Image (tube, rainbow, N blue to C red):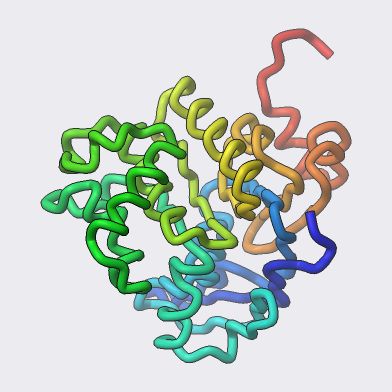
Length: 265
């Protein structure tokens, strides 16, 4: 992993407008992600993890009231970029997002191959044949047969749909992929299979990941570092080995104590 951060986030905050007033979902979060690194953002539901991901990718809902802080990606200041420049130069091509509900992320009436190829055809102008060849390659990378390119999303299992969404994020070879609960609705064996595929991609392609999850066991499979989020803030950030063996924050210790163990300590 390189010393210079690929992504640098400083004092990021996100507030929503609701009927009960303003709600702060992300409250002054600062962190970085290094090249070829997997940063796991761990925390309970409602702590602000998904809002963090959406803020980084600029796909926040309409009721967002305020987004503050600074986000740098390599030499680029993403905060200063206008929306069109960000869409053309960063979104999907350099930084991609895997949404939590895979079926909702796929168009039910468009074939799988066409959906995975869309970033290549729209952002890079690739011809159909060249794009489909790349799609076949990336589907194999995530463990899906190229034969599935002609199928519709409803013809695939939940695990296969999740792999297809990951393939969509990887097809343009972005430097950073944000995964929002990519295995939460899947059985244990499928979860393990997808995490193994992600580890292989990280090793072979050098892709950096931000894995957002509430699952301690799943996070330990991929993590180089762990950021624990609580009530919109990062309360502990450290390397994975230290976090899983000697958590420092009281909330971290309670979280680790909740994980079932095969033998008594």
